[in-house]
Every structure is written in structure tokens, then in C-alpha cells.
Length: 149
Image (tube, rainbow, N blue to C red; front, top):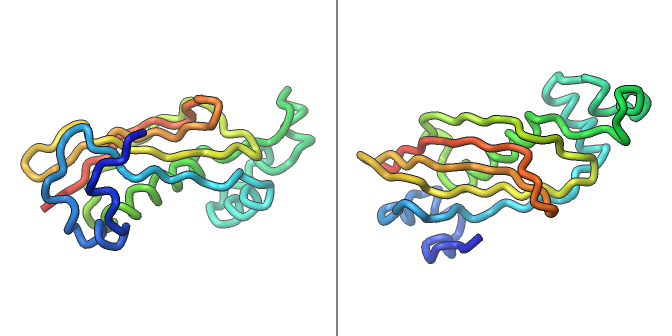
């Protein structure tokens, strides 16, 4: 992924919208590469989100479902995309945000969140979003609309 010249600014500077004035289609958000997802991360997310589905935290349940191991909550990946967006612009600039779950993120998976501007119209940027694993598996896709004014 190529990072555009304005992405060299600090994230705090972008949050102040100083770097968004010349934003055009094709620009890419600074990627967010995360640490491998641990069992601790899954347990903490279960507690924080209220999603205690045992398929995410109990190895025996995962194996009884025919899986080798537990896997991350889809909403954890969505939360990471939210972090990508709000590291880039203040939360109040988000006008819409949609995702589609495409594949599971295994425990120890190392997701990378990415975004690319697909259009800028009347001060609104439409951003194409994806979460990808190092092997190229896309686990989440989506889009967001951000107010640039």
C-alpha cells in the first residue's frame, strides 16, 4: 500500500483536519498493523463487548465445532477499523460506516486495517475499508463516509 504525501503528518495533525484539504480519490489512509491477536485479547474483548460466545474463548467448544482453535470476534476487527478511522479523523466527522464479515481471524492472526478514498464529493469522502491477514486473507470489508469540511 502506498502512503500519500499528506500521510506523513502526525495523526494528531490529521485529526485537526489540516491535512485533509487536498484529499482526492486514490489517497490511502495510514495503515494500522496490529499485534497478533492473543487469547487474552479475546477474553478482554468478550468482557468489554458482552459477547461471551464460547467459540471465541473456549478451545473445547471450537474443536467440537470442527475448528482447530478459537477465533476472533468479527466485531473486534470492526473495532480495529474504527480505530483506523478515528486515528485519521475525529469521530464526529464519521457520517456512516458499514462492514461485511468475509472470513474468520484466527487466534494469533495479525490483522492490518487499510482504507482508500474512492471519491470526494461536496466535502464528503467515501472510504473503502478492509482488514487483511499477512497471507492475503481479507477478513472484513466495508466503507465509511467522512465529512471533510
